[in-house]
Image (cartoon, rainbow, N blue to C red):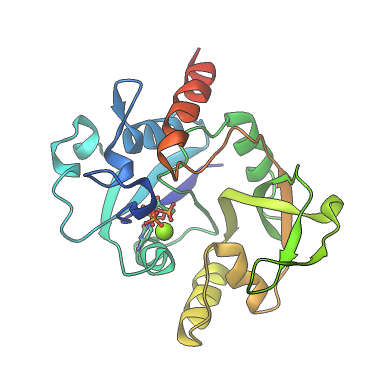
Length: 225
Ligand code: CTP
Ligand code: MG
């Protein structure tokens, strides 16, 4: 069975503090975005990618990957959820859909295999990895309110994989209600849906700050060789 992946890549990368959006920074000789897209399409069950770009993106058109037949481009929006919805709107006649951050170039194919195995089942899900540190909940002065039960805490990663109609509907409802949504699962949770956590590798980092570039190169090098 083959699937389409929506890749939100319309962000500006504020926390990276670079001159250009982080998805266009180099990683092992290509842009991060190319590494992410090529890694996805190299998986035998991914046959199409819908890419959400900033409406004034001047970078993508110059990349060698720009004219690939498996790629559809759409204009992204103000928030990540808007970009994802724009991507979903470009997909018809699919039952399930993947959403994967452009800023996660180090996704192992074994993890994607595990996630895609949810297809056709009762609930969609996300890759996630268990929290390692002791977790504190703080008050507004950064004083500890309480320590949380780490054994039940997970980092939410991407890809996130849900039935297309359910995901569209949940994101739209969450946006209409002005709920802050930073991943697809939050929207599903918000309408009362169930989200399965599928344990993935911690190497699947979201490249966010300058130091993450070195880590991503290290992991990517391991994945590719
Ligand atoms: N994204 C998007 N549209 C937006 C905001 C984010 O498509 N309006 C994408 C980013 O390009 C990225 C992914 O969503 O691939 C995850 O978001 P994040 O890591 O927060 O990226 P940025 O928003 O670009 O970074 P920052 O929050 O530091 O500005
Ligand atoms: Mg952001």
